[in-house]
Image 1: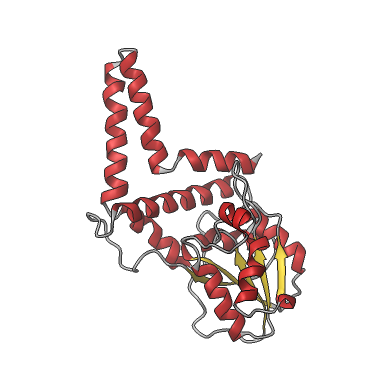
Image 2: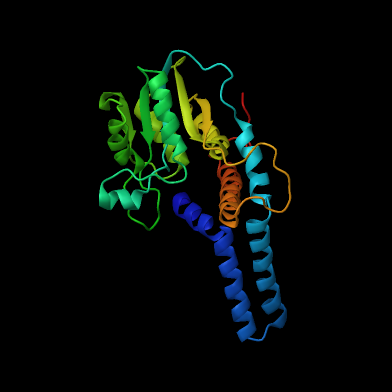
Length: 265
């Protein structure tokens, strides 16, 4: 139930979907002669569009998420394994074409390969099934061996968790798969903006991991202003920021994490 509700809420709160919804409400209000609502909702839609596409608001909201967890100043030694969270493949395309097409979060798997070459005996855990509510797609853990094999990573080093549909399931199913022992060092690789929620969920699952963020979307000194980036990137940043902040709140309210904005220990 939580999975379905999270996907529905996530769909509605995306800026473009909110804009379309408010325009629709405004149109209906106009047809039934509710003049105030017919003006209010299109005005709200225009406001969301302007703020999301032509200001730096999305980047300002993303930056504290990205800055919350940093990589260790000194890379750890004796790393047992590298966990990379899914979300970096185009699952629908790969299901049909049997390749390994990547999306905007591809830095996750690139960083995992770099770490795999640094820690030559560490296990590589790819966690992620098909997280879409409606669309058919190949899970990232299903696709990953094709790409990692092509990049020279031995199949014997891979541990694949193919069932998870969201970050909560990533944490729980990965813990059950690898059964970490006290004192083992496991690196967690995911997008920097996604790291606070990921770390909170792995902690709640009793899996002590070391944050290894990648895929940064902000420059580190964001200020609220007119956008310096293109409108599409601004919209994407706003969408990611809203999803993460709402996700943190929802996971805290549901008891799946202990803090709404977890901090490094």
